[in-house]
Length: 127
Length: 511
Image 1 (tube, rainbow over the protein chains, first blue to last red):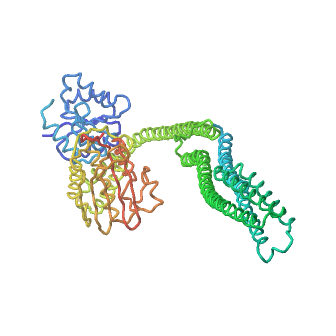
Image 2: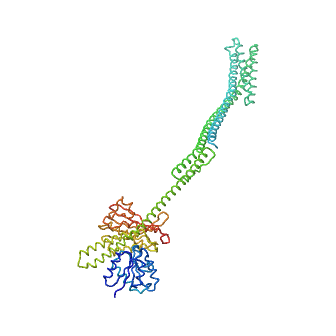
Image 3: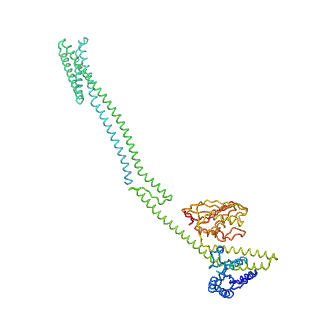
């Protein structure tokens, strides 16, 4: 059974490859959105199993998107994994440095690392 | 006392000493002169008179006997000669009377006078009888009386002369003693005057020279740089005034120097602050720039890496050439990513999470990382722990990152193998106790021209593109954020020692 993953990132080229790579595993169905505000709508609409969310985006940045998701019952418990280009390597290694209680992964990221992280967040009970 | 007065007093005292010496000498010479005079004036005329009296009385008596001798009885009496003899006798008696007036032994001299007069009387009686033609038998009797009187006179004269001779001897001995005494006194006075002159000279010279010598020594000390030194020379003379001026001058010099030092210090602090400001401005700008670069570079890198994953999936395992190319692209992406990550580490250092740890724990942990990753290769590793019970309060992860970086650099510096020595110690640097970790290699060493630039960002000596040129900069930033220092000493062909020094307080932590 495939899982639905919503990828919200303003880099269309990046989301293009992430979608292809994740879907190529056969385990995921990927919905892509290149805008934060639209991403919230898509989340409410599709109710994905997990959301990959870019931190720095024009318009609505990642943290605001999370706050919006928390406002709606249907999206508040969806696990979010932040994707960020602005993170120190030691921050990824320390679980205490989660952004707003969510996991995050530093760009550039290999598909193998991404799927491993998605497996761990979707397997965990929704907080 | 003023210098002129001092000198005048010294010379006056010497002159007085010499005058006193002269006075003593003159007094003694006068005393000797007086004794000699007394000897000449008193003793000698009396003795001469006594001797002449004796000779004259003897002449007169002998002339009497001569007159009465049978061979001359027929000859006429030479009255003139007899009168001449008597006149001489009277003359000597008068001289004797004059000399005897001031002489001692008046009693004896009275007897002499008495006997002399008695003799004179007998002589006159004899002569009267002789000239008057008295009875022949009467004349010899008169002559016998003359002879007897002459012998009595001669006895007392001999006695008086003996006494006078004794007195003369005594006087001579006394004069000799006086001369000896005068000579001794003169010697003693000369010696005393010499001692006095030397003593006074030394005293005056000392009282002038001593403060000058002290002042000279004090000037030497101040000249040597001890500007807080003051001379202890005091006094109301010119040297005292000179010393006071010297102290005032030194005080002003010290004040000026202190002001200058303060000014220089303030200037240096200002320069340092300016440098720090420029540096922190540069770092802040670099931070902003790095963050921007990181974001803008990491996104395309993420696209490329995702694209590589996508293409690798599509190529499968059949097209090895494509897979090999994709591997190269991925490695390049990873390298670019490492550079950007290092840039971020440098530009935005993590906040410190300090904990008290044993330095050996830090070293052992880093060694374990190197060993597991197989980085040691041909390198022999030696660890020496000399920190005792000291613990460091540091951010363990960050310090480990520094240590790892330094040890990796050391290994890179020994491509053909060598010895990597990591040692710990506690050292006092000024008032601050420091915990030191030395990382020493036996590698190629670093040329002196590279040394000043080693801690600059993006400066690297690794020609094979192994480094980003940020490792030492990041390490330095981390160590300095702990209040410590990172220093490096190197010699080409012998190796390099990099030292981490972090301050500790004596209760076991690092400040």
